[in-house]
Image (cartoon, rainbow, N blue to C red; front, side, top):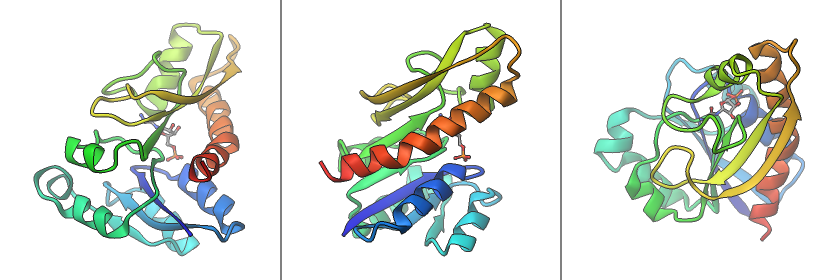
Length: 188
Ligand code: GAR
């Protein structure tokens, strides 16, 4: 049985999509969704989907070993950042080297780095009149959005697209490709 840990900060549509994908697959279990925001909608999704979750604070993540110890006990085969906005502390990167992946809503290295997340990315794409954007799935290291790229997929952006429309296209790509890519990595 593969053991998957997810991290999320916001709405959690990717968490829900991944959970539904693996529900049909009895060789992969989502053993915990780690959530850093006590007001995030992802909590409601976890409750509705019956997913185990753990809400944690900055102190639990950076200043103590609360999250690290929890992960060490869980022994996940893969840690997936699915809309998670905090930098992963070095102690966790080191403990799970090559086992942490992130999804970013742009074609990295474009629109990456601290402060570049969610709608901010899509607003920048529209403002710069880019004709394409997309998704990047990459390994996580100690810097925001800089680990090696595993997968990218692009989509067209038209002059008529608003940032919300770009977000919609990017979410569709994420929902289509992220669970399959996770499955491929687990079966490697
Ligand atoms: C996703 O588009 C994901 O790529 C992005 O946050 C969104 C979360 O949506 N992640 C980042 O921007 C990380 N830098 P969701 O909560 O509906 O899954």
